[in-house]
Image 1 (cartoon, rainbow, N blue to C red):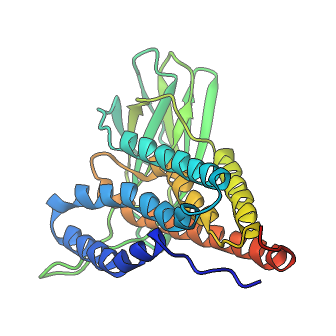
Image 2 (image 1 turned 180 degrees about the horizontal axis):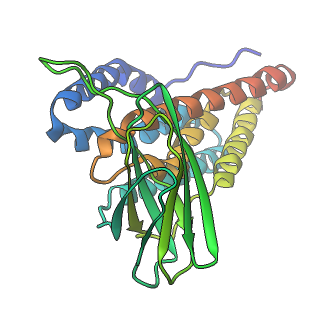
Length: 297
């Protein structure tokens, strides 16, 4: 079955594709050189990528059956609002309760104000090689959390003089520990990292967390919309847009450092590419397997 090409809104968006790509590349290059532009670039990625992904993938549903349009655009709009809401919260700057500098097998114990059962750790890692593994254990009262993460080596833009230097990457896991008592942090493994490892302990400003199953169910719902659209002879790639938006909502807070948001840009772009490709592949499989057997609705 030959599916019609997207028209209307999608055609108008296609005309903006190249200018948007050029503008994004120029903004990223400029932000690499001018620190003043880095917060702008970070917000452009956090807000702009999910918005553009859903605009492009939901556009074919604008001029279709009212029920299909309502369900498809409703799902896409809800995913976008979730991504923007979580993204806005990621830029809310909070003061650290404490900052600890850790060396392997040398535990650090610090008193925290009571009432903070949920905490965010901003773990700043500067890898000295391509990949560096960190294993951190946090203990408070009878509860403990073992946190593992792999930092990837990145380099800062080359200055006019001198060589490029490795830059800090920030991992921001959220943990739930006892609400009272001292907090003990112990670096169990930090091979390949510049030490001591800096760990900031921050309060959680919002109790709202987007769990991973929301991403899975959202993409499944979008695939259902694509199936529905296929029955009406319309090829929509909504699952790709929903995957990007919900991936940002789920994983964005773990990457964005409010005081250095530009550091998260490249990690978020990798998340976006992975989600986009996954959504396109799943949607393509649905179209390949089911489109030949479907007639126009």
